[in-house]
Image (cartoon, rainbow, N blue to C red; front, side):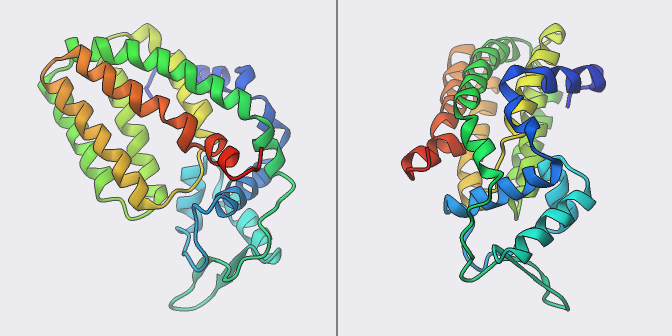
Length: 251
């Protein structure tokens, strides 16, 4: 997150009415819901290995103890399998038990709020990117290139998520609109609370849009940059769980 007073930004994000639904859940249940929903939507395949407990914790914004507890409980339910030894780790069970977990309903019930958050992000990010195209420096462009390269080399959804956050925060910071950054960060973090694991190949395709954005910013072309970021963020209506769940008949 941008260093604009992390406590203030976090409080703003948590107070946002659009993220109030999932606050009904414990931290453990949010992890259970997100992993189970990813499996239910086909984003994680039977036999697929999850990142380490620590990496899962960072990507989903919880403590490692919470992540470990949630993953163990999903293994107890037959959704995941925990293996010890040299080739051990956490895997999607093959075949997995029904991934229907009660806490998933809190996520699915928040569909309208998630769409609202996406709309807010579109408005904010288009305005921010316009100013970024006019104000970004060569040093900041090089930093964005590094974030794109980091995302391109990510081997898991957890690694990619970290690079994605650094990229979007970096774009916003380069706008010069310091007053807008807390509001933007609150919306971004609000959406990240609904982030699910995705196949890394899909995420690498998404990252190509990041590269296209940097190219437009390097040309200081606000029209092209805004068009790219609008398509990038608007696509979340379909690619986030709200769109996937609708297509799969879950909502």
